[in-house]
Image (cartoon, rainbow, N blue to C red; front, side, top):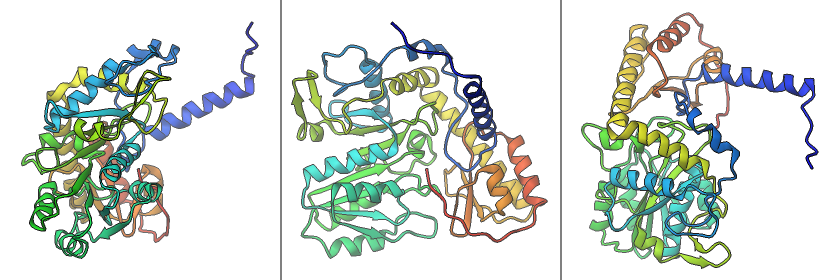
Length: 385
């Protein structure tokens, strides 16, 4: 017997207002790495089901309302893209980049319990939180002006702690400047210092999805020395639900896996119950795009980013971007501009991220606003994606 009742007219009106507000906000942001040009309407019927990807996606559990098969295909797609060994990779679809980073650090800590973590001052804020949660000692490394790790400072700092295993958090696409740490340089420094016990996790939340298509390619994947790589699914690909992917070496995962009889699977993920809809969304998108679609998507973003930078230069604004980046950095904008276009701001800079849904017409409107708005000094604290 159902006790459900219809929403009141007031509550129905609230939903309509919320839908309108969200649609308007979606159409006017340029400062956050979220793709909005997706259409998953073909999957609407799956919202009727309690899809729960319990346990390890590579193990057959007892709960069958799941999308493990699609999840394995998503993991396999990115494992190939990141040049993982075909017989030594594993991963799962997470709730987002923060969980993916947590898993990489968790695995590293379990392998090397007495290690020291090194990460750049440009690293995403979630990393500091994850290190605190895992209770691992850490040292912050200076960043270069472009946001990339200062390798000289890294080497000098590691020298002082050569008696400890090293866990390094590299970032392939920093939050504000989309700078990319060179994993091969990090690996080379560790080898030069004869630190055999080490682990490199690469946080590639935004840029990892198109890193393989950059020309020239910048070192970040498994062949370059990474032990695990994390990406966000809702950023470059797009999803109505925040999501991420963690890819690591199966041989490392096997060293921490534990069986759970209750679910008939292995306890290898951070959360127990996991969203089973997100792997379905990512699988659907990757089937439609493939590698060539992602490559073309990236090229369009690069073209838009170059157009944005050129138009800002035309009105005298000193905009710039890192090589292969779709993020355009400019001096901190007036508050009016920041609020209208939802721009992330840190210290004295703002940025525009030319995601696949950003059009040149939007760039033209933004440049027009910049040209016709008087500078206003303001102080504000920004949350970062």
